[in-house]
Length: 411
Image (tube, rainbow, N blue to C red; front, side, top):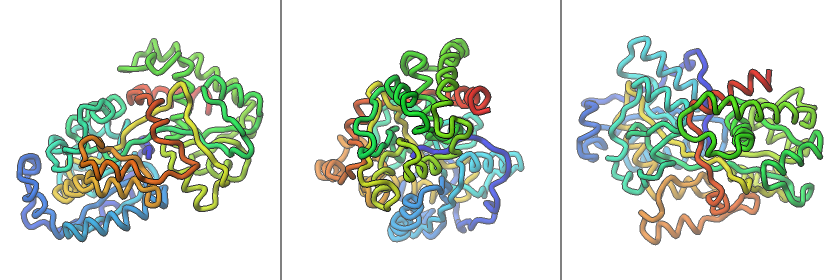
């Protein structure tokens, strides 16, 4: 799942009070990078790992606190303490605050689910443990040469985080109300104008709402390639004039005539569930199937991606520089990459998040198990998303686009 990214001020309440595992002989950072993995496992055994991650999805929370925590305990004797947050930027702020306070060891956060601007902030600030990722035993199942793995929203990973999941943007509609959805951004914008009040989007910086705005921005720029590479103010200005103009002109045709926007994707999902709007969207299409399964969305819900491209990204886990339980964090990061755990996570009955592994690096039986996973009728086929996938813009582009939307459209 795509992760909330806006950096906000304020300490993460109560984080410093979280349990910290006692370690009789903590390993040095050099040892964590060079020691045999069995040594790291033994150093972590019997301890605790504080795993901070977005807590806004019941499926994710149940998976992490349930089967994942149970597997970690059974195999390694490590207790997984899930710490759910409303915004991953809160975790970034926690780590920054600890650095400012001189907390160089014993920090509250052992592992964090992260990507985008949040990763860039921590990496450029030297606030992450680096140099271990490709040495993890299960790292052999990852194609580190894949640009979508090696770069996180344009920031080189450089061994400072471990891939956990892949995500691609898709839209959902009720086929009983909309027989054939518009399949390009141009056609979609025309549909919105022709059907006033039947569409809206979550206001940036909501992660999914921001992704929709980026699709409009790339459409206005003439394609994703026009915005690729490092941020360029001249290219931004040229695209922004048209993109924000399109979004401004669209407002009278939005739900409630654009006088207000849903503040997050949960509100947009509720509008769709109530038939107040005809589309919702998400960077994790399996949520559409889950919505049907739990009775929130109509059984006739289906999903699609724009033929002219849909954004795709990778999310990761990372270890802060001052984590109290680094060895346990590395053991958990390695476990998250195991084919068995990735398969469990990819099962729609558990979570349904796409694997970060390269199936060509697995045994034939393991690869076939991934390919044989069931897919809900409401969820677009992964191969259809892969055919349309576009790499995410760099973090600088994201920040500029969001800031511009808030100032010029959202106001």
